[in-house]
Length: 261
Image (cartoon, rainbow, N blue to C red):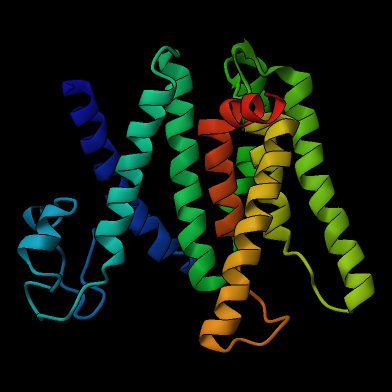
């Protein structure tokens, strides 16, 4: 039980840093300096006001200095990352520390992608471009196949995953542009799926695409009917693909066994 508490706290602490990344990366600001500040008055946040989730509750969601409301997203990101870390730990409890560390970084990267894409409809190259070759190296050396937990993913499967993820979405982008005369897929989504393919392999790309498309369709249609959005209006696809990648990572093998069974 104690290790789960430790992992949860670690995930929440990293989640606090992810909030900094989500806010600063789209603005090309340093994620290291300066220290965290109130977005309204610019007052530096004291360490005791920066305790994940707890400080937000004690401050009742307001800045100590100017009393301006703080976004509920801050504790939500911290809680989400903490829950994802606990899930990684429980699903891959027998894995090496290296594998656990890679998956911690992977799920945190997906959290950052989700919220930046929701706000700005971009997926930062600073996450995907260095992540793609790194994913192939790690997939070739230590990462297991999420659909076969006791087998190494391997160089071949990782490279095929990169090509399947990036290539298939690039094909969708080119075809959609030719047919509809407008962008059907952003380059950020293409690079993100190449990264997902490098970590999860081609089977992960297939399942991620299916789940992401299903979620995007259901939520997109719901927004049209509930909020009056127009058909064909642009919605960020990255959050749905990220959700599909998380499902593939954690339950890909279970889904495959259920399907084959």
